[in-house]
Length: 324
Image 1: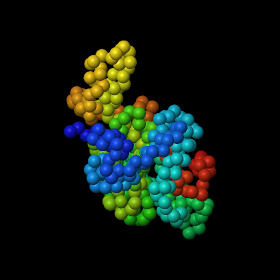
Image 2: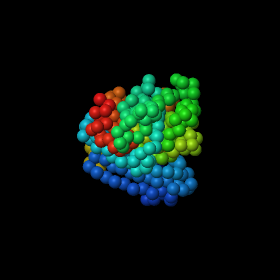
Image 3: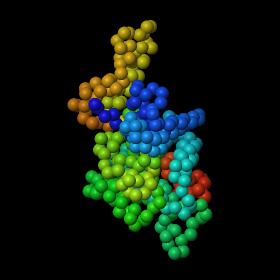
Image 4: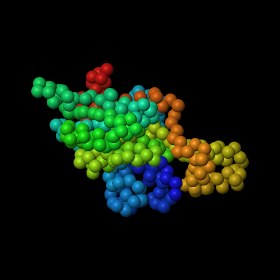
């Protein structure tokens, strides 16, 4: 069986939709829709559900924003505020708690630089609060951050670096930010996933590393990610589906050949495409050509949401003034 590369719980649900078209035992799903944002909350409650979904038990929240790539400043602010609300609801920390944000990824590779770019725009306060005369405004939390790099740069497992820092800082919560992989082109750079189950860096691209989880670190972990890449077989599969739809519309009754392709099982079609292209391109991951500006915009959205979620006494506009 060929593993379909995705970090998203919402796509894990889609992968088993044929076997479970309505409900998955032990999985609760709640959906909120607005004009611009669809928020899907998935709760995996049982071991049976864990086996079916391939995800550990916990809460998975997905914000789907199809127009997020369009550089709409007002929409980005709306997404930041919705994202902040979900972080608040998932963390529920007292104001005197210390939070450490971890920007996972390789800052030298643009599609993987989301985490480091986010922490550059956070309102960091721990170093001020730790000084004898340090004072901050009411409603500001102790916040610190780290970008530990990747194994290929440091020679040290990312999880080991984080463990060492935790021993000194002793945070009450870790928020790990990472770039993800999707199996749907439409979700690349338009979807935010939040979960309280931690993260295994690199798992979506077949390079699974030491987990950043409560079990490995001894501290609650909230994982936040946005897909920035999709594998080539998925892209070819989606393109073929769109081509078939277009060709069927252009024929009066639709050719039997096109209908055959249309009705073909999606998993089987993906497997055939993967087998055809993998000898030529290997495990190729694809990202949009304008990924530089996309990642900058996404980092700003996430950082804005984290700032107002973790510093409840400061508004979105005030955070923006502090950082500029």
